[in-house]
Amino acid sequence: MRKNNISYAKYGYLFSIPFVLVFLIFNLYPTIYTIIIGFTDLRGLGRTTFKFLEEPFQNYISILNNRTFIGSLKTTFIIWIFNFIPQVLLALLLTAWFTNRRLKVKAQGVFKVLIYMPNIITAATIAILFNSLTGYPKGPVNDLLMKLGILDAPSNFHLQSGTARGVVSFIQFWMWYGHSMIILIAGVLGINPTLFEAAEVDGATPTQIFFKITLPRLKTILLYVLVTGLIGGIQMFDIPRLFLWGGPDNATLTSSVFIYNQAFAGSYLYNRASAASMIVFIIILVLSGIMFYSMRDRAELKLKKFEKNRLKEEKRMGAVR
Amino acid sequence: MRGMRATTNLKKTGIYIVCIFLAVLSIFPFWVMFMNATRSTFEIQQSSIGLIPSKFLMSNWQILQGKTFDPIVGFINSMLISTGATLAAVYFSSLTAYALVAYSWKLRQPFFTFIMAVMMIPTQVSGIGFYQFMYSIGWTNSLWPLIIPATATPAMVFFMRQYLMASLSLDIVDSARIDGSREFNTFNRIIIPIMKPAMATQAIFTFVFHWNRLFEPLILLTDGKKYTMPIMVSLLRGDIYKTEYGAVYLGLSMTVLPLFIVYFALSKHIIAGVALGALKE
Figure 1 (cartoon, helix red, strand yellow):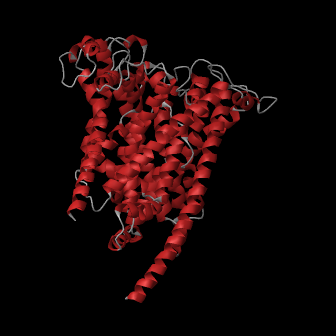
Figure 2 (cartoon, each protein chain N blue to C red):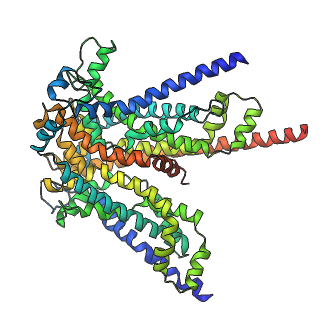
Figure 3 (cartoon, one colour):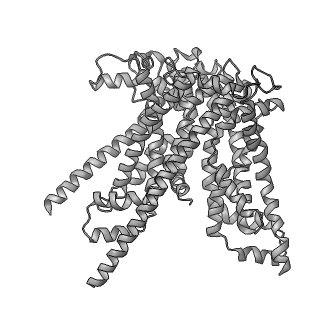
């Protein structure tokens, strides 16, 4: 007995050592180091020594006064919104179709496999592929749009900020809606099937079932999709960096590309880049916090209301019986 | 009744049309890419969408070979990094998860809460500090800083813990103890086989994740011999390939082909894995 309860506990610590050590050295230490660099004068290629600034927040002040940085935050936000809203809407629509018990859509497996596919392909490859596809004056997209009669003359997508951002948003949307869809479908399949059966018996239409049962029950999963989509979207780097290197005229320069440019592409302003990444981190924290609390509270309230109604319903049913 | 069935059929037709359109939308860019990889720059300039292959694959390959883009080097480096990182992540995440499930120790719950908290921290936050740290210990242009950190993958520990809680009976561990098996041996000989299905799913995703990663390799690796596949790909965006359309498409195709093979061979597991990942709570 003594052996069982006391002497095995040390293995819990022992087996966690590799994880903890690597986490402290390669994750926590670099994070703290980044925070520290944000308050120093560390700049220039190959420099590792630094001293703290007399005015500690100087880097933060100059970053917040940097028009390019503020512009990059706006750009990130615009590209994110135009990718994320259609992404979630289409994913929800497909989820509604694929889980509709009356329609029984066939070949779902094939559709899922093909729709999810772009997600596993290297983003760097996709960025350059779309750069070639949207080429001017001859490019597959231009050719296709002219053949379909949508365009009269080839359009230079790379030179107009609207189309350049549009293409980046589209790539993100195209790479991720399949992922969101599969997660949402898994969420629906996790809902107790008797709920749907009961609703069907009561004569609810598929639309009613989707909005009154499926959607409220999906709140947690939807929150997961929202938060991971937010964190991933704000950090988007590969596509905007390689599609047009942030151009034209910084129209696709997202905050991650800005940070990269500050630190590694020519100017080596490590201190400013650190301050910028901290600002972005704080923005991510605040936004996911807002999402988390607004969604969670409402979900719980709804659930409580729903349970109450269900109890009432059951009582009524019992009385009828 | 008949009217209702007619509208249902109409709706179904609509759904199939949309789904087929979306499937084509997924395939079309890659189809054009593979076809254009076999076409000459002149052909592509005449008509940029070719739906059938041409016969310039070899000449495009010749053009590619003469330049900085080296898919073989990229492939080997990416293979080393992805394999190493996947092995480290899968093995040590399982070990940590086992520590969390099989033993009761004082800091168990706080440690688990900590893992949940750091799961949400975006990786790029530590980018600058990570680069400076690696630079100061002379580890830029080394593959190690891209492999070792995978040992601590909080999300996978979380996933493995959930899996173990559902599938491990501690009686097995106890009877192994009675048979005189030492704890570390028990983990390697008995627990790992139990975790194999979960490990396989997680391995696929970790591998693809590390294969596709661009940011960290880009800041750490400056020596062409250490370039990973995504960095090699980014070279295709350079000026020397500006007029070599066919060669660029071929280079892109070569980076996509291995992923296509893996994906279509394992697609069932991958789709199931994505679904499972979301339900980990």
